[in-house]
Length: 272
Image (cartoon, rainbow, N blue to C red; front, side, top):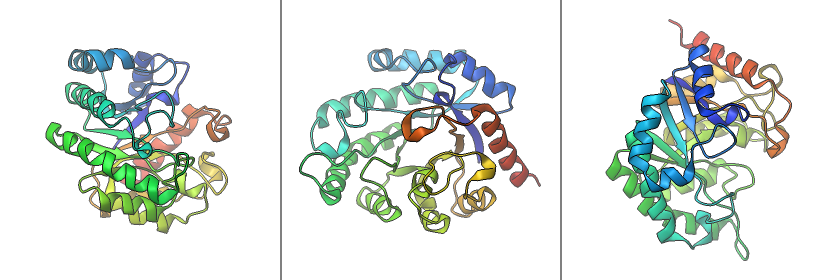
């Protein structure tokens, strides 16, 4: 396992500056997305994915761990659970996969969708399963792992539902962030059951009621988490995802300090 840091952790930095911070603190990879000053140019990614991917790979000076691809402008627009936009989403996703391949990113993650008008969780899950099947097949053809992130404010809010999604779509992986379950009160050992499905990992401390908190103020046991992933055979990236966002009031932590604490926690556990 190896560390990365999410580009959206530093919303006031350019992407090149985020890469510089990562290098400075000994983290050799970053996750890319479409948000803030540190974002990719989504329009360019969709219009010239191979050239843009090669450029990013050559200029940033760090490895690319993962791409966070959002189909619309927010979590609702063109969401997978809606049952619509399938052709447009597949076309865009093939371009995102081409970018990942050119940039050297081993995985891409997308969101599961929300409960749309007239739906419940079962209908949302069924629509997402059908929407994911061609996307996962495209990822397998490109050699890129396709991951879905269970998150609060989606319908995929429990470990049981996340496991059902994985059972319904052979080959799909999870972008697994324990914080999205811990905030809702799930115990860490309940979340551990999803480790065999992990294709990418997000790391930040959390507790019931708080999606993000300082390392010393949360309930997640990170040495145990690292061991669970190792024992499940996970060998990919662990992305530190401390953020400064209005989303779930994650505005109150020193992102750089917490990133370094997470780095040190992993290095202390992995030292032999």
